[in-house]
Amino acid sequence: MKFRLVPPGKRLANATCAPTAGNTAYAANALTASSAQTRISRRVAAVCNRLAIIGTQLLTRFARHIPQQNLVVYGLGGMGIAVLTTAAFGTMGSTAAGMIGMGLCASAIFITATTLIQHETPHELLGRVMSCLTSLVAGSQVISMFVAGPVAEKMGIPDLYYGSAAMLIGIGVVGYFKLLKAEKMEAEKAESAQMG
Image (tube, rainbow, N blue to C red; front, top):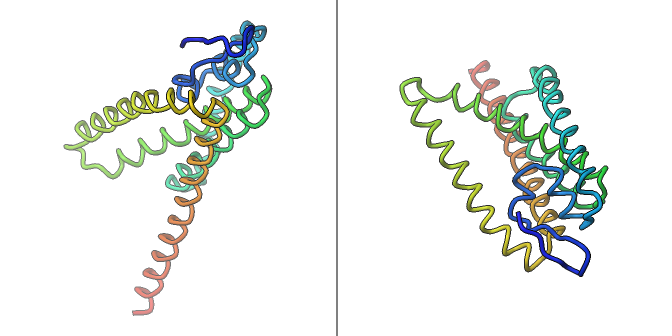
């Protein structure tokens, strides 16, 4: 993570790590550009990480009643809202709330998606599929860092966050309506099978 003086006396973090790292210290400095908050933001990051771990355990308990496909879609939309919260207010509190939300939503997405993939994949192919998935995720993280840096240089870090939030919310909304359509089609097939 490198810092630049823009304007003199204020630090602005290069955005190549802030949106993907999930670290409150970097995101808070990137959005508020205040070097006085660095020590406090590290403490807040530690608290947020602990709360995210606790929240993940609670999420697992409450998510048993939600279909797994829906949980992934809700996680994507929720992550978009968390990113939007982080960018919109630019305070330490909103950053902490956004980071906790991102942690919870990431748990909803990754744990559930991994479970769905393991359930649908034949046992003899599971190792290959999971290794390909891990490679795809790692590669996309590197690519996103290469893209985020230049975009942040041109548009600014808050606009990068707004764009990320818009994409995540958009994917969540499209996924939600596709799931509704698929559920409706399944219900119609089941109904026609019972009648016929």
